[in-house]
Length: 146
Image (cartoon, rainbow, N blue to C red):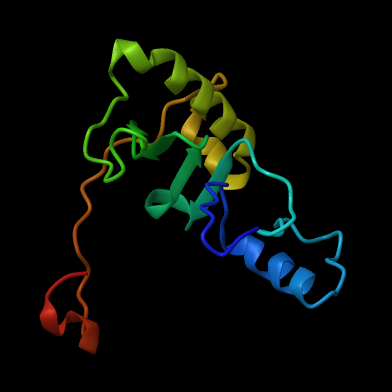
């Protein structure tokens, strides 16, 4: 690939190690979930997760659209038209099929405590709950809540 080439494949942190190993000529172990960003296969979708329980964040991205469940709501963005993720299309009739498809893809990735977000195979999220800040006596609280 030329130095001035744009590559729009879906990549994540798990792809760094296989990429570096490939550049060094070292085989990537079969247990590694990532793909080389240079020679690896292209993903059709990318799933990301952070945290567990009520503070968990999950998302699925198909290269154009990104779906993010938040509590008991869902956000859907068209990253081609809205790269800053400002316009939530989750309730738009024009994007109902995209939402349904991405929700299905997201549900396929769920395991463990994520299964609490489902009822009868459908994404329902978690009940609303007031999230009050806890006391922070550390230095990180010196400039307000984070």
